[in-house]
Amino acid sequence: MGVKDSISARLRKPEGFKGHPLFADDRGVDPITDPMCQIRPDISDITKLTYNLHVTDFTKCGVLKRNVSEYYI
Image (tube, rainbow, N blue to C red; front, top):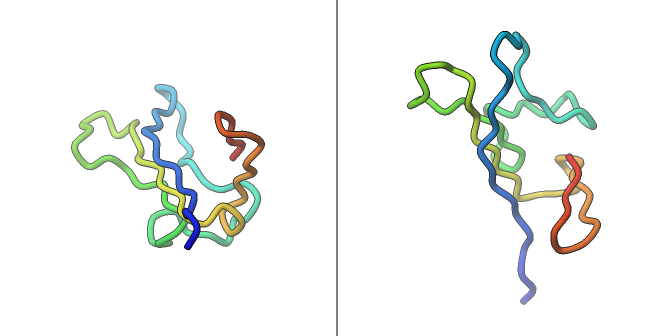
């Protein structure tokens, strides 16, 4: 059985930026509720600028794997 790729990261949007992070390749993906393409607010951050990214399906989320150290979202 092969290893399934995934990626997790903490994102911080610039102060004053009003939008929320999303997956640009598929705006139909709801990053708050989708189990495979997640960008969820960090509820412990009182500034409300930090998000937790977790991707378990690269194709669905529009993530391209170029090599071991680079990912494009």
